[in-house]
Length: 112
Length: 115
Image (cartoon, rainbow over all chains, first blue to last red):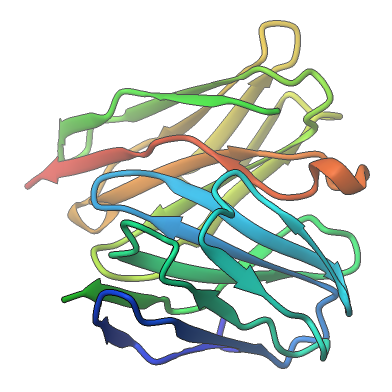
């Protein structure tokens, strides 16, 4: 877990703004994932990437975008098209076997 | 796609008692079932996982059982302690298939262990 970092820890956004959440890992993992967690609920998949320069939409991709230009980095942009972005965002990564997923510490996004 | 249902949503036990959380899944191709523990405001931490080639796995006070035919799996915690209080999530995936590698999570169970 210590090999995955997310920043910032807290983020405040005004309506109509795009914001980018950072996720970096030094575990040499091929796959990276973004999940959204709302209060009292489970984790829902936004996007995932199995290899550099490739990514797939998850269940709730609308209003979000990602890039995977480097193996270590998988930033998530929350666009103004996401109508209810206030949530806890968790990044995860897994190794070549795609079994165990390790999570970063999360970013709590609040829309003002 | 996969759908994972988890019950109960809340569970309160006395310290020393056992706790059982159950999950069912819909996709028969799923073959990897991890359990995560999440404390308030923290990241989920993997506590145990099971692959479909075994029916049970134990790690000290924690065990997971899998019934592939019925498509359900359960987490068993024995001799519960106050520090076991947290939210527990089950999940399912098929790591060998590119379109099924991402985890599908249950909705979580809030476990409270009363001292």
